[in-house]
Length: 230
Image (tube, rainbow, N blue to C red):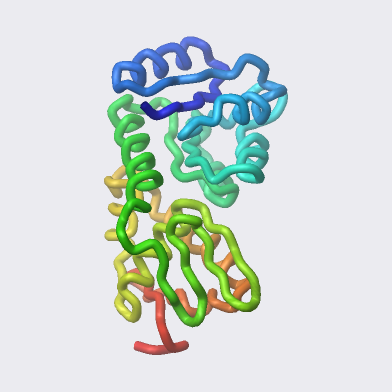
């Protein structure tokens, strides 16, 4: 049974979401003190966090940043704000998905299921690591390392990298990446994928690998074995 931490100060909405998620056999935890969100997160140790942007004391971006400093637990934002920069900010901070209020509960459940399946199931595959351009990519640990050092990726970043290096020197379309990451591209902004790829490249830059994730305009992305190949 998965544990979900719902960081939401609207108690009516919190109770409605909690009741509905419990029907799907999720254990749902709320926040008792909005100045101690990180401490309560540490005590609960949830499998997934759902967080609103507008909260008492500090906003959801603050708590996402604090959680990300300690954990790669999947995070989904809920927000009534519809400014594109909110979604971009949430992705840059390491969130896995963004849902705008008001939302259909079926969409929320679908995104929760897709996120949990992606994060906790794909690592059970027999292949746990790959070598790419001299670096060791460990799927289970979400790390990429070579003689220059090591970087830790979020679940989404590793999933993208995994899809690309499993098909090295082949173009993987944006549509396929979006469907694989979020199940249904109709619920996801195309910019969300761009943000995740840019964050992946920024981390790989430390190892000098960022140039080998190529953008194929109008098509998708490709991980290459030789700079400028294909």
